[in-house]
Image (cartoon, one colour):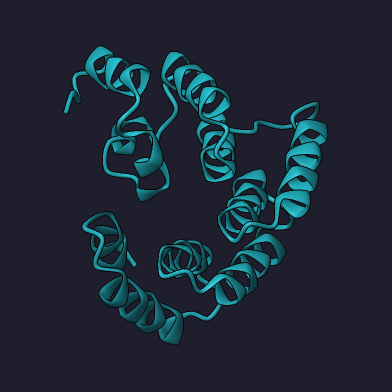
Length: 162
């Protein structure tokens, strides 16, 4: 799973997919392998497969908001705006009783093309010191933001300037 994670951030999605399948052959309920497999599928524009993986992750995790957000990201990347917005509403409700990570929301907003909303969420994630902050620069979900001056300012703020 970790090797697939590295391939994902290196943008070698075919290898990422292969490694996650190997992990899932060992443990079909390996939650994070489903997440990273779905993430690689999104980047390959294999949206149906991504949705399936994220729904599996949601089932295994009993509705963990991180995986619900991943499903929203897949819908947004696939151009299914209504479904992505429904997920955002669902995450808003979930945030009243559990943690919903800002960076997860940022991915959905970035895929929807709502750059200011995405950048606001990234900034909040940085302020809250979310665990995935160190990956902002290399996360393919944020590639659409790389030319934004504010994105580069945020990277500089945390020592990851381009």
